[in-house]
Each structure stands twice: as structure tokens, then as C-alpha cells.
Length: 134
Ligand code: HEM
Image (tube, rainbow, N blue to C red; front, side, top):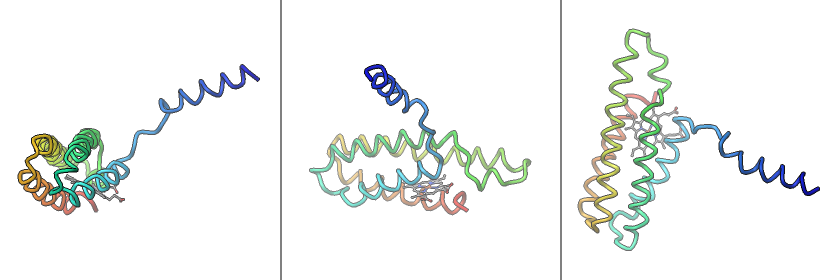
């Protein structure tokens, strides 16, 4: 019984290593939740610490997204794929950098700058979805 329990414990602790890498869609879903939360509370200074964490998490997710390939790019003829992927990665790099600037604005309690960055990220989100979420 003891060794059975030990095996179970070992299995459970090893499980995260086998957890599937989130898909692009799953990553975007998490970004959606974080960005909505930030958007609702961007002017609330009592939420700056939590929002700084959420913005830093968005940066991490964008870095993971950067090496993923949207279906809209994968389905292009091979001759167009490389340049479309380069454009996708450039846009994701830019918004990843903005997420870090957003974190810094919350850390500095600069809610006006944070609101400007959120607006800018919203425009980039729209552009990214127009181009790649098909
Ligand atoms: C603040 C920024 C962004 C947020 C909050 C966001 C959020 C989302 C959400 C909620 C979805 C729908 C996921 C679902 O189907 O459940 C989505 C899909 C998608 N987004 Fe974004 N997005 C952002 C920026 C971008 C940018 C900049 C790009 C491209 C340069 C992009 C590319 C895509 C693509 C390709 C999909 C489709 C994923 C799939 O279904 O496989 N997103 N995004």
C-alpha cells in the first residue's frame, strides 16, 4: 500500500512535465481573460500590483505565441508563408514589448500611461485579428 501511494505521488508530481503546451488558441484565450481584467481596472490604483502581474504574464504568453503558427499562415501557399510568419512575429514582438511597458506603468503607479498603452494594445489586437484570425 505504501509503495502504491508512493508511486501515485511520484506520478502526480511528474504529470506537469507531460502537460501539453497550450495551443495558440488557448494562449489567446488566457490573454483575453487577462486583458479584459486589466481593461476594467486600469484606472483603479488599488489594483496596480495585480495588474502589473497580469501585464507581466501577458508578456510571457506573447513570447510563447511568438514561436507558434496561426492556421491562417499554415494554410497559405508555401511561397507566401515565410513573409506572413515574419509579419506575425513582428507584431507579436511589438505587443509583447508593450505588455512590459504596461507592467512598468503599473509599477510606477502611472495609470494615465497605463491607459494609453491599453488603448494602443487594443488597436494592435484589432489589427492582428484582422490579419491573422481567419
Ligand atoms: C491584447 C492583445 C490580444 C488579446 C487580448 C487577444 C485575444 C484573443 C482571443 C480572446 C482570441 C479568441 C480565442 C478563442 O477562439 O477562444 C484570439 C484569437 C486569435 N488571436 Fe489574439 N489577442 C490579442 C492580440 C493578437 C495579435 C497582436 C495577434 C496577431 C499578430 C493575434 C492573433 C490571433 C490569432 C491568429 C487568433 C486565432 C487563434 C486560433 O483560433 O487558432 N492576437 N485572440
